[in-house]
Length: 342
Image 1 (cartoon, rainbow, N blue to C red):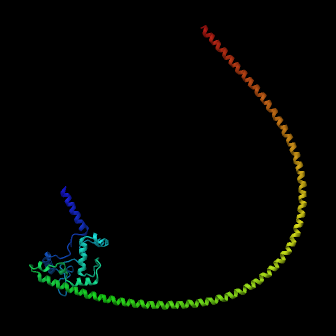
Image 2: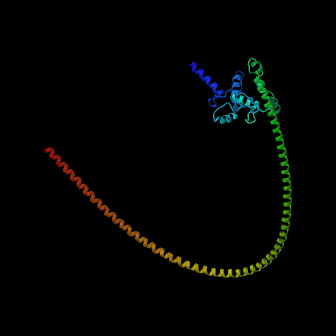
Image 3: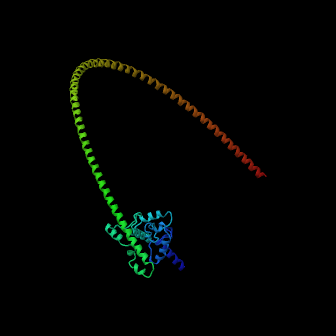
């Protein structure tokens, strides 16, 4: 059980430093002193691009140091992009080391996520030798080895490359400055053109406004004349309407008086008709009441006769019941006598 726990803890620690999907090859992008001799032999034997050998001088600048990340799977670019988004505290050590190596190497192709430093510090660091900075006791460690001259040549070539990189950087800076100056000139021209266009547009707008104001003033004058003519016409029409209204009022008064007389005559005729109708209705009501009393008397007589018939029927039924009861009693007596006789 202890063995299993130990193995699991070791596996967790290893996974936290370098996960398995990151690959196993190119684990150490830095060339350590103990691997220098073997690296020199391989660099002399092979001349591929991975070793970054100069075709002009024939000397390798780096000893089999991989240019790209220390991962060897096709989908590892996704992993790199994902790790770049992580905070620096949670990034694995191999990723941070690779970033520092690429920054010291001065590789302009690979964009590296490094801490923000000033340009002066970066230029000072690039001027130094890579191996002198990474290994301050480099000469003492390699004193016993036979490849000291080769390592010094490598260091010199690294410094040459750094100088070339400086020159390229200076050229790039000059180009950038020229581009900035050209861009500023273009912006100035564009601003001047914009200002001139704005002034022209303002002048055109002012001219249009003046034309519109003149047209509006003329229209207002025409409207004033039309309004005066319309007011005069309205006054004449109002006077005519007043005279017509007075004549119509007189006519309507005469007609109303005639209508009132006719209505009075109609009301008198209607009152007389109502009186005659009331008398006729009273006579009809009296006749109806007499008929109702007669019908009620007949109904009462019928009800009395029906009650008498019902009473007679009840009496007959009661007599029949009494007879039946008497017969049953006789039969019981006869049966009792027979039982006693037996």
